[in-house]
Image (tube, rainbow, N blue to C red):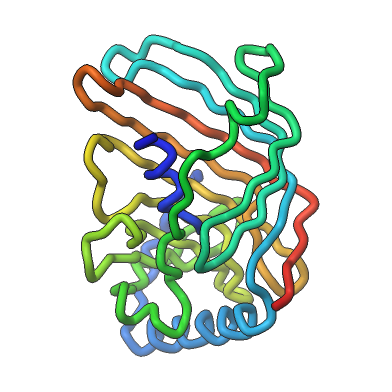
Length: 232
């Protein structure tokens, strides 16, 4: 349960630094342009639907001993402000088909506060740490720091292309771990869908440890396709 709750709290790499300096005025200018793009997106769309192929490998958190592997085919409809909805198309554990309920999230929680929307200044401090290359694209590395330490606040880095300010990658965690959560690493990669950016694949490494109750490390990899933007 803790694993699902921690994962759901979060709705939303080979790097080579150039060391290029960036001044504060440029930071503000860049963030203004990114917010303008996001405002136009949020005004027209309330979420993204995609078909996802998911693999979850489960281990003992303390020893690293392998436990089991889930493979899931699902359709997920993600919202920027509400919990996602999930339709399980198939579910397998260690290669054997099982009931869809074995792969369906049992708890729904709202996603993290968006980093670039009209209220983001209340939640985050942003800065540009330099320029790096991601997948052969020169990008700004945006450092995201939470103003409040909660499980709905993201902390980490976001990477936007210098040309066009397209979101390429997100790496980070949540600002506050709920009871029992020992580790949460998120890596999401994005692709262009018309004028907008959607998650193409992702990686989540999560550890939960509650003595006598939970001793779990879950490593999730997913690939998304057939994206469709959902209009308001």
